[in-house]
Length: 250
Length: 299
Ligand SMILES: Nc1ncnc2c1ncn2[C@@H]1O[C@H](COP(=O)(O)OP(=O)(O)OP(=O)(O)O)[C@@H](O)[C@H]1O
Ligand SMILES: [Mg+2]
Image (cartoon, rainbow over all chains, first blue to last red; front, side, top):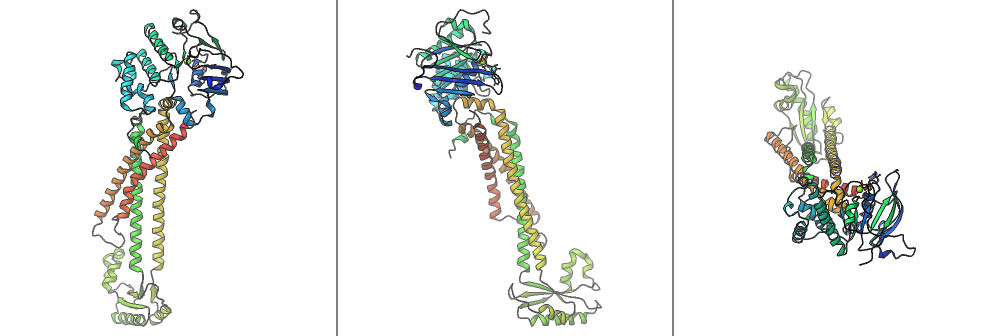
């Protein structure tokens, strides 16, 4: 596994080596102030980072850039060694399939069962039914949702919905997993279990970026951190600092 | 084109939209209108064709009644002179003097029972069949006028020309109705599709972010639109067919001069049968195009 790193771009870096690479990326919504200001950094394959930052710092926005729901206002974004702006529409779709996303607000489809929600990425990828059935069941067992297979999301608790959302994000064995506050609605025991799931995935090669403001939880499974503040990304390669008094939410 | 999309399970819950309920009715109504327009065009076409068939190569000579309408001898003598002139004309193949009773029948729709009254100054009519529709009449009008002052030829051309103009404009109108109906249907489908896109924006963006191709989403919309378009089209076509059969049935045996039959021939029936397919297809392609255009705006 490549050593995890998030540092300023070396001038003559080989672009293909990085899973994610931002060059002078600025993001602003409409005419508003920039959420990201000329951010340059890169992330190597196989790394696991927490993305920390106060509420409104731009964590979700950075993730949106990475799962191609936003385009940078300025600068260049490369994923899997390819400049995203140069990709054809078809290649962008294929690239998205290699990225699993846990949304902060889950975004489960209300009229589809938990099973169908989790199955969605496989359906989009055109997997055969039998394979979908066995894989989805196995994963739902793993996240403790065996009895909720046929339930509609609105009938599930917040924590259960979150686990469905996570299962959906990882079912396709993505190369990159972007999780936005994935442990916000579960108790600490389940939160730890989910963190272990992410780490398992990371050990099998998935690059993980997990946005959270629950720093105390992050401290229980230390990983390098990226901290977002004032439109800038700062790397904190060592262990997470002990929980600060001003920590938001959790 | 693949047809698998027709059976796709559909993450976009389109069937629950209100549009799913009103669109088929709207399309049915439009197809019904188009069917009626077709009916009017057919009726007009039949009428014009029949009049043309009846009147071509024929003309009528009107012989004004003698100064005393009751004077049968004078009347007969004037008629004989006209008939003689006609028989001396090369282009004429057949001459038939209409009896007073026949004339009265022709006039009855306008004059009622009174048409048969002998004292009425009704002109006598001589029906002439020509050897061919284009036979030259040369100086026939002058010779007739010399034989009996006031005798005149009515070759129906003006009347036929007007009839054709009327038939032509009604057919054009019918076509216009069909075209407008088509445009309205397309506009409706675009509107409904856009509403659907707006309502289901979240799901669509989710599918998009998960790497669904635009076609994956478009296929769900187009399958939905195809089903609605077909259902509406079939409903409207069946209603139009029932109307046509009903009118034909009401007019059965009633081969009046003014109202020709409206029974559809195979051409009209197949047009009516094709209409639902067309509406289904138009709805499908419109939905597909609308969705693809909208999705193209996503990053
Ligand atoms: N779609 C949008 N349109 C306009 N402004 C937006 C949009 N999304 C986010 N913003 C703004 O961008 C800034 C960063 O928001 P973002 O959601 O990325 O923060 P965050 O770090 O994820 O916060 P939280 O921890 O509360 O989820 C905020 O000021 C927010 O108001
Ligand atoms: Mg956020």
